[in-house]
Image 1 (cartoon, helix red, strand yellow):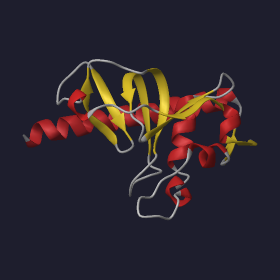
Image 2 (tube, rainbow, N blue to C red):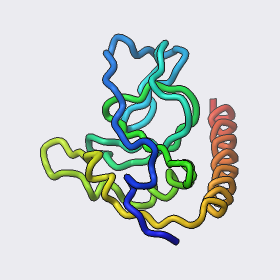
Image 3 (spheres, helix red, strand yellow):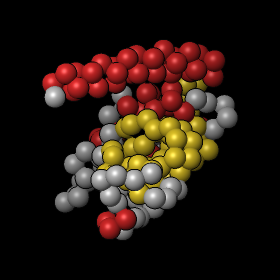
Image 4 (tube, rainbow, N blue to C red):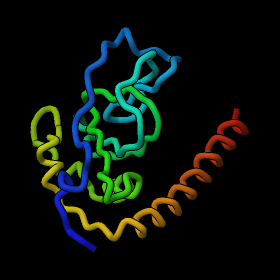
Length: 156
């Protein structure tokens, strides 16, 4: 395991962009991802790939989700993409257990800065091990999601 600062293992570590509320709809082509997850849909995207999404502001700041595909990432989300020497999905799982909310500035509106996140230390195994772990956990997540959808369908 190698201990490094998060910023040094990322190809991208930055906030998304603002989007006007009237451009977010209940249906659309691309998901709009904010700091607390899906906000709705829109007809344009500003991200294409895979990333960890960290909530940047509000009571739930520091929460982490994994995203793959095209989406519109808002200013309330920090987009984290691993560099070529690391696995983005593994990084997402790792960050999700790091209690990042503890890093929030204590104010009326809690928030975490990209600079603070970039300085956080992470311990990473070799890339092949990262890929094996993220593949296994991804398979489990897919099964959980399928079961949740089935349960929701049966409940309806």
